[in-house]
Length: 112
Image (tube, rainbow, N blue to C red):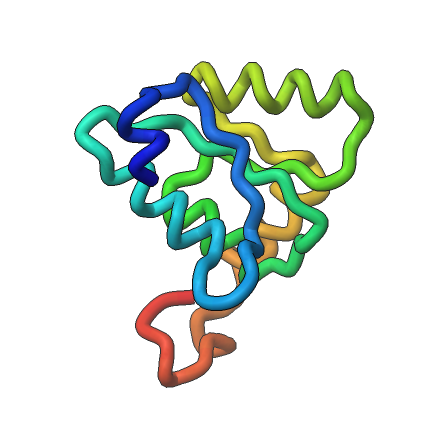
């Protein structure tokens, strides 16, 4: 995060998995909390709904998995401009999850 604060890039390309102890969602949350927040686009091979939702809730502009170069470039440009950059298949899955009845949420969680 200190690098993002010091360099103030227009966009950070983030992975969801760093190894032990840290996640891309946690790093995204820290970067988006900076005095001058930086846009974050998550690039990952991990595409579970929970991982993606955590990254979006942390402030990521969107997520991209393995994709053709022209789609990746479009996602990078959209995210750098502060626009949403979700692949249609990911957007559909997230919308379905958000529309699911709240009673399907585990009781231990305050939100779904």
